[in-house]
Image (cartoon, rainbow, N blue to C red):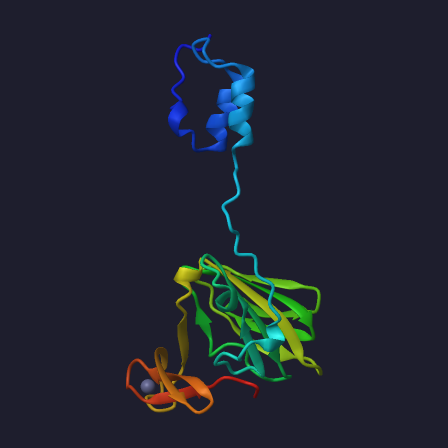
Length: 211
Ligand SMILES: [Zn+2]
């Protein structure tokens, strides 16, 4: 016997509450026809939906050590996940250095070619048709490997927490140190400049491709 079930009929918000509403008749006042009508209202589409179709070839390259980096997420205004399409030639590093994301998960799916990831657990080679998952807080440095240009998708979430901590040897102070990020703009577009967080020396800069 159900002694008490509380559902606010004027404010039914969730599918689970609606399922409860469908399964039980409340106080003898709610017919199955009425609950079916309620169910049909959920989920109701928001209008208009911002469906978008894009062609990555038409996007401007973002700063990267790779030949191309197309920020598909920025192009469509995605808010919860990151999605970048890369093309990298053999030997190119695919990120701005050995790094980890404290609060962000990543998946790389290789479309063409081959990638190689250096990690504290050893090396992973990921070929076309394979995917590589990087957990939060896990350090990696990736390169395009093999003889042909690598194409891959990098997907990560949550997008708002995509801050990367880069740790690389600094030639100036001789230590492995974190990097500070700076940005500059020149005729090619935005340039990302990396500085040693310990001695302040400029270490590297990455402009937009094609490289
Ligand atoms: Zn330094």
